[in-house]
Length: 120
Image 1 (cartoon, one colour):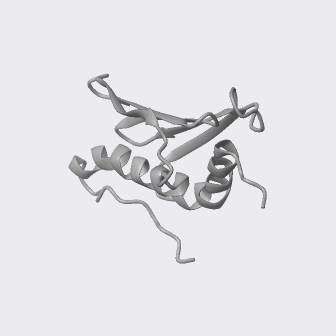
Image 2: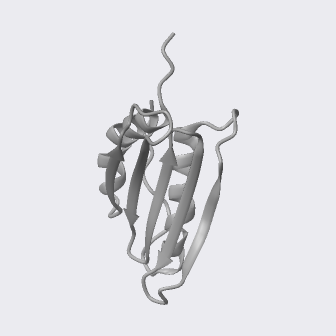
Image 3: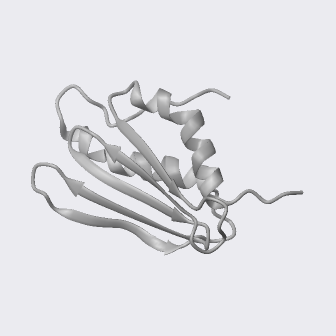
């Protein structure tokens, strides 16, 4: 059984979810570097909501970093920066981070702070 790298897991999540998420007005982009390299391989998913910018970076060596910036106040926040645990599921982490990033929308009129989900 071949083990799929962390970068490849993020790329697969992005391919499966980006169109659905972007339909809700959230902009996503992805950039990978050395996806097969066990040490240097990394992937960054950039997120833009009406009120925040964020960068979610995973490294194949086993860590994740999530940085956010509020558009209005320009306040920056480290949402997460840690080693990935064996029980962590990359897709679940990405979904969790997205929910936390879009929390800024909850205080904006006409939005509920959620994004569409798929029924697989």
